[in-house]
Image (cartoon, rainbow, N blue to C red):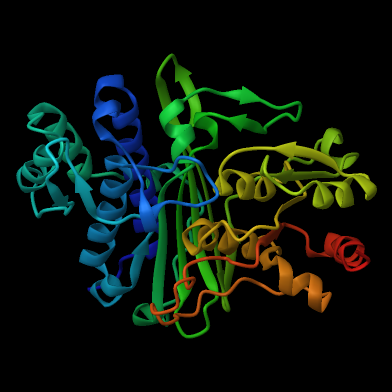
Length: 372
């Protein structure tokens, strides 16, 4: 079934389909209000006062699972995501979101979640089943090695990273060109492919559904991809090589980062940028608009880092285990090898992370952290 089907092309088109769904959901305030549901209990990220799940999140995740699973059946059971597929409508009915074989089947399930809003359900189902050929707009997409063992590949999906920014839509810009503090620019769709036996990320997609503003409330995507296989290393990422970047060292952080951590970077003459969204902060490193993204807390997960890490590896960088790298005074990459689900933290990057495009900058940083 996988013969002559390029997984990279499939994932790029899935990312654009996800972006289309995100834009459709976001374009109508009444529809957005219907879609938003606050996460509770085990699903909530304890770092945030409020964490949100939207139907868009779940629908995107299940659309990607459906698309890839149909074309690559040997991967179907290893396509994992952030969101629970259970959604409770305003009548208190718990419904499992599933993508049907036809738009009619999918719309029927969505209508139950949307409390009988048939037009909204049909519009979303149409996007799920729409044919997307975004890959044809991109140049130099490689063919993947014929020897690639798809049964050994798994996928982590973050359908909408920075969900709170997606919901609020308000944008605040920083003093650093290209870096947004909050808002739709921080929203990303993250897809990462990893080898199940080694745990190494090998293909990554980071899409910004709202990357280009065409006019008021009309957006198009910005998309980055990377492949890092033993016999193939390539990407489509551009580098900001302007004089502004050449003469500045920039670190990007969460606004909740510890003051002590930030002081270490100030001591090393870094400028500090703050932004929402793990995927967005990693993207700023990918695009070379920031030199490093460090998070000392264990508040990101496999779905946040797998895609960006594959791209950074293709660029010669990586996403590292923060605690292990400082303790061992050398880069220790985050690994995705399958673990027992009985481990409550198996999905969590519990030791924090360091994302860099250039591993050489780590020497002074790791040494500085070891001194304290």
